[in-house]
Image 1: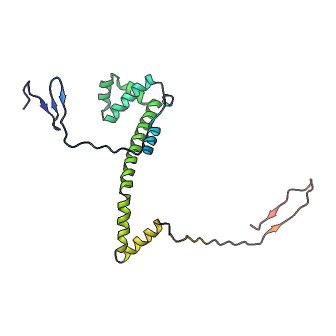
Image 2 (image 1 turned 90 degrees about the vertical axis):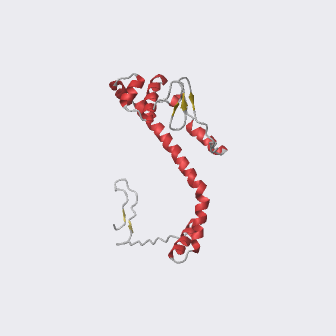
Image 3 (image 1 turned 180 degrees about the horizontal axis):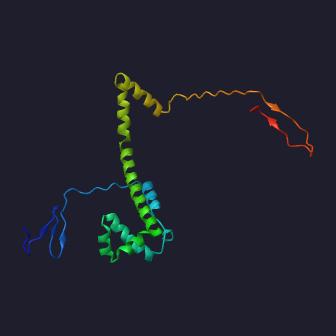
Length: 195
């Protein structure tokens, strides 16, 4: 059933859409954002801050490239991108064949993956104390499980047994060194190692 003209459209998330405005849903749960440490924040800024000189092309060209990349990453297909940008298919293909497009696209994807990897590492770091404690608690398990845990704990504590590497050498035929006095008419000295 469609809403009446004075009745707002209610979206699935509860947002109300009026003809002249959109009213988002008020959430009772506050959004908490993890704040990085001072050092982490400085590293993030240094990694992400770039200079205009690092761009692969002039900004006028990159504006079109950036729009197409944004629409592509948003999930629009080529037909929709052509409609949104007023480009035809050949122009879109030509734009994507430019080295600047490939470089920008790859750098954006790399940045996204690095940010995701950082978040995953942070999850592991936050859980590392609990994981180590659980690993150490396994020491009290009877049998092979406790023995394996003991070996792993010792390895991680730097008490790993010394790796012994045995070297065996054999020289057949001995070593012969022939000393020749320097005479300009003679050849350079030869060292025969019996190989």
